[in-house]
Image 1 (cartoon, rainbow, N blue to C red):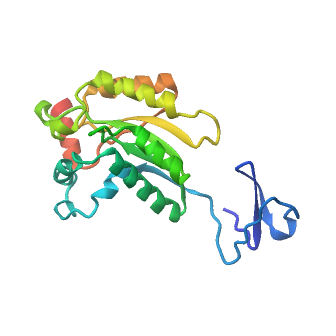
Image 2 (cartoon, rainbow, N blue to C red):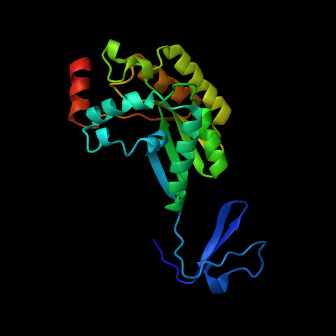
Image 3 (tube, rainbow, N blue to C red):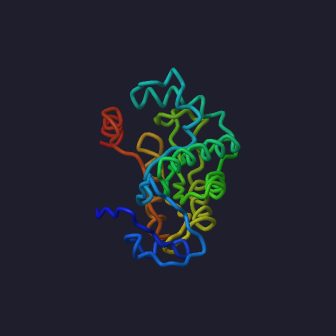
Length: 231
């Protein structure tokens, strides 16, 4: 937590190599940026986002709603989101984050309708230049099977979900230090996926050595759902 007044930061090959008082700064560099009057801090890290929701955060019917009521108001709207809208929403969210000092963001992307894939999010990240952890989310438990989301919004074939999880890991996950893109597997929640998908996604994440991400125990309704359905 040391504060350096009138300091310098030396960056080489995209890594911070040294920091210290300006008097100790090397006298040669390919590029110098003068940040007098500014404060420089490490990049902030956002560990959980839903970037597609940037499109619907001002919907009056969902304002100040309890979680399940809020989701139920938004599910019918989200059914109409397209890949182009997903990319635009991601770029918007990424720009807002970067302008606020965030340099790494994880997006739990569980909406896969109308041809949307996690590739759309990674395309937006490449365009914006943010370090991006894409969490391949999924909803497979529709209302007809006791879940919260409408059947039209879920992916019915869990085998296909798992195949696509493997595909996006192979396409986008970079295990190397300082990687700009990584993938996590992210079955959405106890009220939107089956226990089978939860288990299979966890098994795959371990075998591929990638992250595992979900929602759980978000509020009393979430807890009540799990207690009633799973005991």
